[in-house]
Length: 460
Image (cartoon, rainbow, N blue to C red; front, top):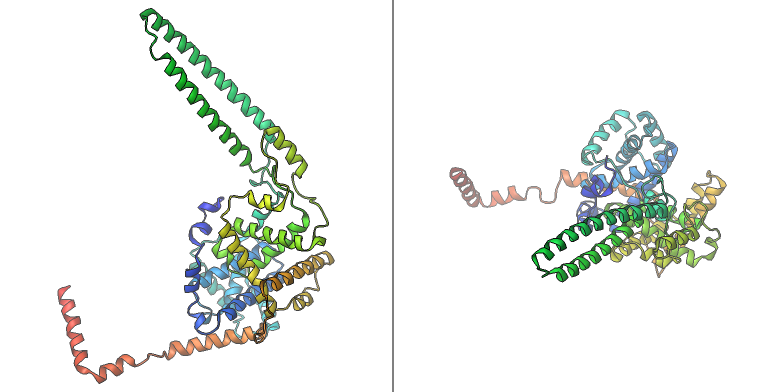
């Protein structure tokens, strides 16, 4: 397992591009429209989440299963597989990977219950089928099972966790003072050695009567000393700001954090986890949450209670260190991250586009009725997030959607139709018998082509 995202299999092998993503879906797009295919992935991720909840899995294993499902269909097509068996296998493998294993019979029995709610009849409710599918899934994933999710990046960005998930024996101020003392002692020793060496050189030059070049040597020494001073200051700032202590960041209240968390949950219905690193996804969620809270002032009712360092303590520590004060506004906070703005806004656009299609596929009123079993605080937070989703859906579409109804029942019918049509096309392709007909119609050309093949074999 890699502790660094940049050296992990997630970064090196599973961040794809839009053209390759479109190429991987060309077969499916022969049997449905791009909008229907987008809705199908929303439908499958919804089934994964329902199955994960019935198995009492946490959000991280469910998110891992969603990413496994998306990765599997980078190399396969929905119309050539049984997607319900695949998603059950993804949940089964993700539970093992995230160290919350579930018995295979439990997965099969709970999957049967979930799929019966949606009148899905093509799921093979057999443990040996699911076990066999597990090996096919691992093979297509190239056994790359470590997933870096944006949840931890969100906690680091908003100051809820230190970036290295640890504690330091000294504060930044104490560490800076100790480092300065060590550097000063080293500089004094160096100056003392240089002074002694200079005295010896002066004695030798006075005995020989030559003083040429002493002024030039002094000037060079001053220039070198200034350059070293600048390098030391830059190194000091990098050390203090890159320590990952959580100090010196802006203050993000609980409302923004909560909305960002719900947005991250929704992003697993999109393709952003195949296109962007997790920190870009987390920053995009924070950006959208800031926009929503500025549109709805009632969401910003509480200040941060779980942040490690508030804005006042960060300001004081930065003043003692001689560093610029931490950002006081959302724009300054987001501008402080060294992230490509076109990449960030492309990710934001991908997330925002979800809500318009999702609202037409599954209205938020249906989602609220399906989540009545939650606790009161969870239900209140979820309804608030769904209200923000409505705002995003309205913002992403200037005109109301007048397309034909396409919901869960239509999605299940479309999956069956796609699989059946693909089986027919593979058994009876459109170009079947074309070569044989041409050969019968022109036997001379067939004879000549056979001669050409024979000559090539002789040359080899």
